[in-house]
Image (cartoon, rainbow, N blue to C red; front, top):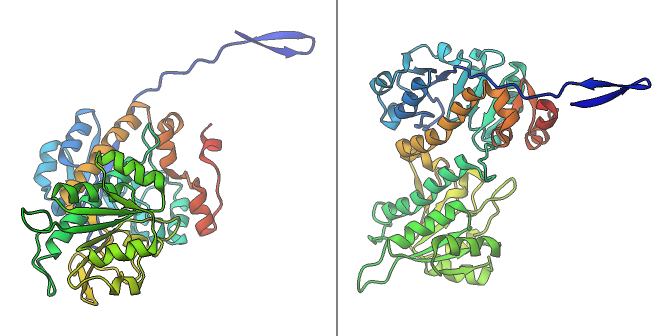
Length: 396
């Protein structure tokens, strides 16, 4: 028991004890993705079955999982409700999406709803955030949600897929285009191994290196961070060629390589690491897979391509510039995202609602960029000249 002074005496104050938070039942809506070539879905049938088993409701728009090879029947069997009414799905208290809501979709969202999706800030407009604010929505972004180690699990998982896929894509391009050299990406006895150059030393680069090495390729990694290069060496548990981004050494490697992977990130835009002139020195039929293309690309010659027309040829060098590589592997990506979203939803229910989860889980709190219409991410507020308040000052 504590005491408070009042006039000349003391008044006893009762000690405040935390009240046990009661569980809540969630009603989750999953609309069909409408963004160009987006094939993923936020929850798999297995995750839906888990949510249903915990007493929650899941409403899914018909056909939402087809591109990830999940049939409506799979979701019905898991206990979900299926509807063709998009507005009804968007009217659920909790909405799960892969891509951000469109402006027309926001019109159907109920005030004070909870929206969990990607944010993709560089593709957004100020109007999107103003609409979100008008509806007083609580919005969380996959890119911002953290785990107990302070890492970004959703970003890492999709980076793992993109890194692994970049090598598999390069392997396909080495035999399936007009200037292909008919090479197998790997190491066959008596034949020179494929030479791969990886720009960057983050998660995408790490998984590109692991995949290339597993196939038997010879790999060289370039990054200006010695710490990242050292960490990559430790993570793959193998000594490989690493170097800082010195132009002479990089140019020499590019002239010899069969595949170049761009996995460099910048604060706002990916830095140009390989100039047009450097690219022109690469050999005929060499492959460039610019994973950084969604933030501008780290090859000056890169251009955005699509899954329908994934590559173009410039100076006899094949360029791949699809910005949404994980969507190419829709089922795997969906399973990966679902594995991370499911425990967050269960925790929200266990805590008695999203407000309590935001208050008691720092990782979930970091994922919030709009809290009942208030912008809580300074980077977004500064970018779009919006009013901003620290989430910690709101919920505590």
